[in-house]
Length: 124
Image 1: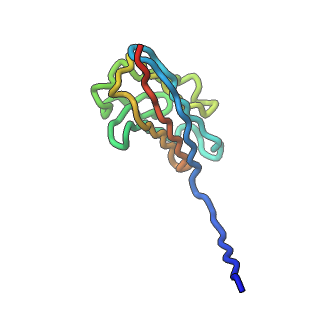
Image 2: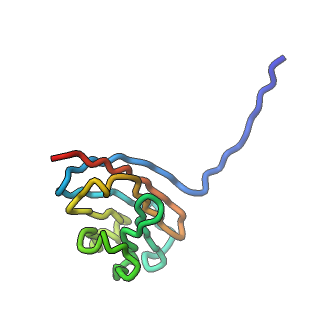
Image 3: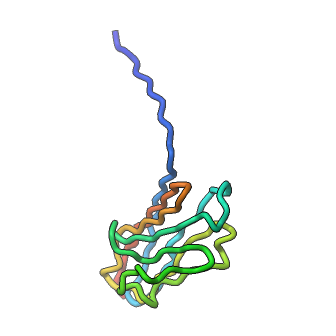
């Protein structure tokens, strides 16, 4: 007689993945937003990473931190501080090259929300 197995799963963090396509020399917006309204904006930190390690940018609302930014993203990663109140932490990446292809992770703390964006680069 077959047995049925039941398990209860609870998600602590939300993980979404989207795919964005860009072209060499062009620009793309990498989307990231939060549903968490329990924390004040001043308590929220947002980090963008490329392929798990390269620091694209850290968004600390009302003051973008560029000290730890990987030099290859300097003057190429644009943020939208006017959107932070709406919990929109998307960034615009310009001057795209083949090296920009890969996974971008947007990590929002303290809510532990995470969004993954797969960037595909097409030739001109």
